Amino acid sequence: MTVANIAAPAKARVKTRAAKGLGVAGTYLLLAPAMVWMTLFLVVPMAMIVYVSFWTQSTFKIDSTLTLASWRTFFASDTYINSLWTTVRIWLIVLVTTFLVGYPTALYVGLFVKNKTLQTALLVVCVIPFWTSFLIRVLAWRPMLGKEGAINILLMKAHIISQPIEALLFTELSVVIGMTQIYVVFMVGPIAFMLGRIDPSIIEAARDLGADFWRILRKIIFPLSLPGVVVGAIFVSVMVLGEFATSAALSGRKVNLLGNIIVTQVGSLKWALASVVGVILTVIMGLVIAGLLRVVDLKKEL
Amino acid sequence: MESRVLKPILAVYLGLFLLFLYGPFLVLGILSFQQGPEGGPQFPITEWSIFWYQHILGLAPPSRVAPLPIGISLFRSLSLAFMTMITSTVLGVMSAQAFRRNFRGKTLAFYLIVLGMIVPGVLVGLGSALVATTTGIERHWWSTAFATHVVYTLPFAFLVMLAIFNRFDGSIEEAAWSLGASPVRTFRKVTFPLIFPGVLSAMLFAFTLSYDEFSRTLFSSGREQTLPLAIYGTFTVEIHPNVFAFGVLTTLFSFALLTVYAILMTLSVRRARRVAIQESIA
Image (cartoon, rainbow over the protein chains, first blue to last red):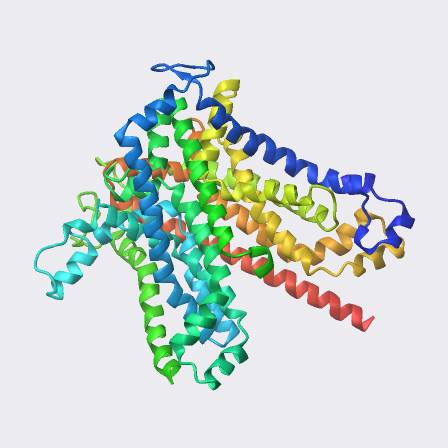
């Protein structure tokens, strides 16, 4: 093991508690494999996407002559611009739905359930679906939402509707429903965590001073849970913006996200255009994360 | 008091929320018992049968529904998840150990590792496919896909270990050193047993994430499909209840995995407790 070769002299060890028996060189040696791995297999590929987005693309070949052609193709095409807006729209909608669906759950689990064991148990129950394949969870919505799906059958049996609702499957709605179910837990977890840390005496004090529950929720509970909301929003944003499987499975090819464009372009070996979309996606992602981090100072709050 | 009214309302809401989470899954489970091979992936159930389970396991008579290529892709996925688990846990423990002291570029190193879980899979997959095609490296699930999987799971393993080391009492190690134990011996006999529950969690994270990962694998694995890619292949064609039966089986498999994890965890906690008791007797 490397630890042996790089042990610091005995004296230094005893002298500083923080030294943990390793010199500075040792620290860097321990860190080196991970750094090399991340650089080679993450930073270099990401740089490559930027580089290739300026390459010259002919039908089935690509060469490294620099050009803006692929960028022009992207911004000149209605299909691609539309998919850009669709991505932003779906991202915003799913962000809102996961928040609206998730917050009451987090409120109950984090604030109203006082028993720690029950709290953990409820969170585990929320996480269990994650041990099923993501793709299976997406596919499971098909028999649920279809024209002859479970929801339509139940609604017709209950005589709420007389005709099956066809808009449930293979529409933007089905994509939003599917994504909300899949990603809502990433909202619930961080929010419940922050709510669980609220000192009950603060809420009691507010109540003693005559504040009603809505006021307490607005003025105390929500602001204190905001870091959780931001962390949840970052999780959801990152995952939704890079999505293509849910839209492929549930929209019947009607909803084309930027991710779907990348998949089709790579499928037809149009590497340059796929890279352009990749760069655009990266920029959006960076803006979103930077924007969310401005809402709260996570380092201070967590 | 409002909270007396609000609490039951929220409890009911939680019930509905869980129905939303589990509903599709219940339906999927029910439909997996659809009659085969004519029965479609929707209601009503024409006749209850286990045909699609037999179909998955290759026991059903040949029909127009092509069998899912499960055997070999399952093997690939499990091997890949295992390789990823070992590599990312080792790298994660090493990096977190390095992070116990201050050094120049610590923040940069932190962001570089964490970036792996932030960048969407489709971009990492695209990037590594670009690097592979331009450099002429052949893409395989055990080479390029493996590299991208570790990029994804390493941050999780690292963060878990970082949290563990945060609560770690370094004076125990110092005691070992002052008694003359070498750093390797200290790590093996003192540090590692204490962080073992964390290591198990990091391994569980890495394994499940890699096992289920497909957006990174899609572009970086070449022709040989892993299990998620085999499922993804069914998206474009007509789906049959065999996918549902398969979903039920994979879920059972995941629970088996989780049980193994729980057992190992309990054993390690119990062992730690026993050692502590023995020490207090001695």
